[in-house]
Amino acid sequence: MPLSQIDRLVGVLAKGRRHLIGLSLLRILLGVASIMFYVSDYSRREFLWGPNSYDSQSLAARPMGGGLFSLYLLSKSQIWFELVFHAGLLTAILFTIFGGRALTILQAVFIWSIYNRNQDILEGGDNLARILIIFMIFAVTNAYLAPGARRRRERLTARAGTLPIAVHNLSVYLIVFQICVLYFVAGYSKITGTVWQDGVALYYISRDPAFSSSGLWSSLMSQPFLGTAVAYITIIIEIAFPFAVLSRRAIIRKAEIFLIEGMHFGIIAFMGLVCFGTIMLAADFAVLRDEDFLTMRRVALTMFAAAQSRTRWAQAAEPLVLERVS
Image 1 (cartoon, rainbow, N blue to C red):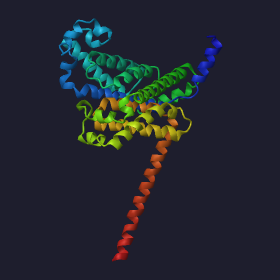
Image 2 (spheres, one colour):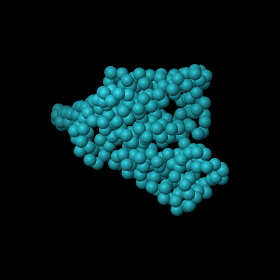
Image 3 (cartoon, rainbow, N blue to C red):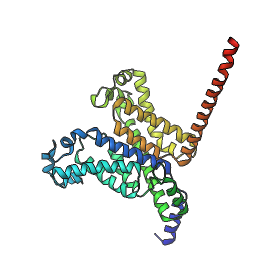
Image 4 (cartoon, one colour):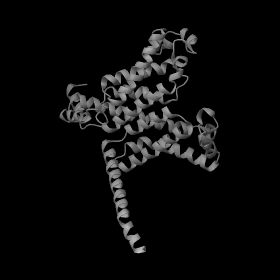
């Protein structure tokens, strides 16, 4: 590609700073999901990931776990295992709080390592997390909700139009593209599935003990009309995701995210897939633009101020009412 075209491309990509709030929320929620992954099975860490875990013999027959990189497989020492595990947990905590490129690289190494060490207990969100964490290395993910965030935003403003901003924005586009492809493919695969076409997919899922943490979930999905409606709505939401996200109408983008977030909160509450749901919530936030978050913040503050005014008015009016009654 000629140098002039490269300069033109960089100039286009370097316009503005994209999705700084969404990427900050993505960082925090991915970090929280990683911390939960470590802590939820902390007492069973040796059995699941240790050098003498239940699958150690099968792994021993394959070099580096069948070609998958993992720091856990570099040594059979118990000390090495404890060091890697706790270093990964500490990195997840620091990554959640501070962010930054160095911590993002370390977080990528450690989550790839623990995911590859034992794939029997993964919920599915790890596939998206593995991809997003690579893109996040080249993006600014701590411009909000991190120590020194305001100073970092000022530096980004001063560097507007430069190559680092172009790299950040390109990373954002790749993250959004990956999430849009994920939802569209998920929705399309459901359309082609017989159980989803018949509207009984969620009924069968609710009967699987691995995906049901509530008797209410099974009871609700046993209702033919409700189960079918939820199945079809899920397909529509997922298929519509890329089109809604790319829409210039903010209301469409925010409505789509509201619906998809509700779906993932339902997955967390009824199916017990907490890490998966948290990772998907993080991905959903990443696609919203900064102006979307600022608009929602203004609306929330306005509603809160209105509620406070009504409360103060009611408190001021109450003595008058009591006086008239007496």
